[in-house]
Length: 265
Image 1 (cartoon, helix red, strand yellow):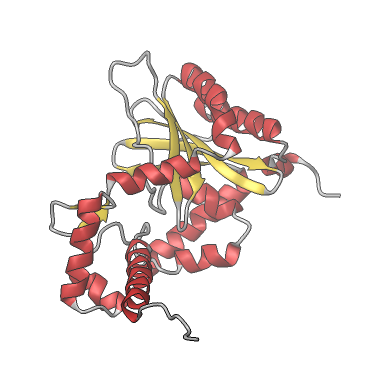
Image 2: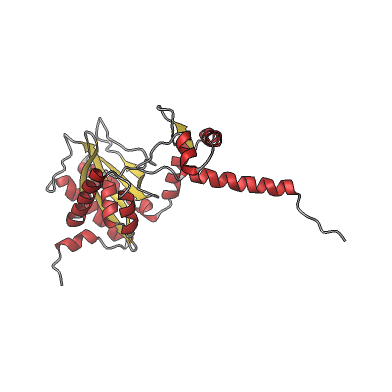
């Protein structure tokens, strides 16, 4: 009686497939707010690939729509990757409950409203409600990965339950930028919201949204700096906070900034 064995070439093919998937995962994991673009040479250096292999993988990922070539000749996340990310995010409960609150906020504030959820290393825009009454609209692309200097990022950094990971993330910045960001995050903890100009000429005013487990999203309005104030007494700020509080309540969460006005027991 002979014992059948699987052909060795089939085994090797399976191993090659697994290795390919692993390498694709490694390449895609290089992208974060501090690294929005990579070159094939950087992929080779950081992952220990030879340059030919790195270039071949990057080219294949471009063909698949997971990466795109940038104007500088590097590689950035592609449309399919952003689409898949937005699709996955869209299944979360907060995204299903947020539209009504966002539409009401957009009408009263007369600006675009952005809902962001935390990705691997920063907020990802999951839904946008544009101000339909405006002739000129400031908006953000769904699937965009927001850098750490945005209002939404600072709110997440202030309330994220894994503060050790947040510190490690901020530690990747140069010393001056890191110290400034830490000061901004402390201010968010003190006042419960954030106004910032991450993009020149564009202001974002953000507040946290909580479910029963903690912060699950940020809701923000965005607009040009000549129409949207960064002041703590701006009426638009109250609109944002009220929307975040109402959405938190619907999610069954506790709106932690309200604790700031309560006397210590």
